[in-house]
Image 1 (tube, rainbow, N blue to C red):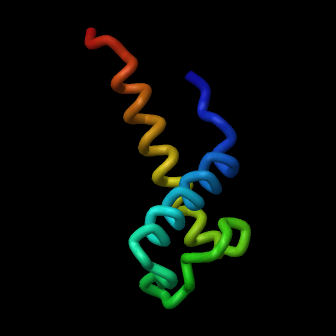
Image 2 (cartoon, rainbow, N blue to C red):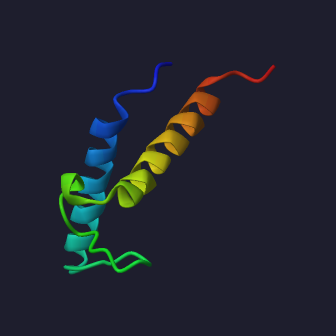
Length: 71
């Protein structure tokens, strides 16, 4: 299985996260460094984007592992 476009999927993951937070009434969320995270993916710092990228990679690895029959 080939890893999809990491930036595209990361942006979609971030968008889904924001929608989930907004549905709970959350309008602002800051990182440990004080960066506002409830902004479009393109406006995030590289460090914040890396969090979404890491999530995508981890989920991809988990899906691959679930798809692979045991030896």
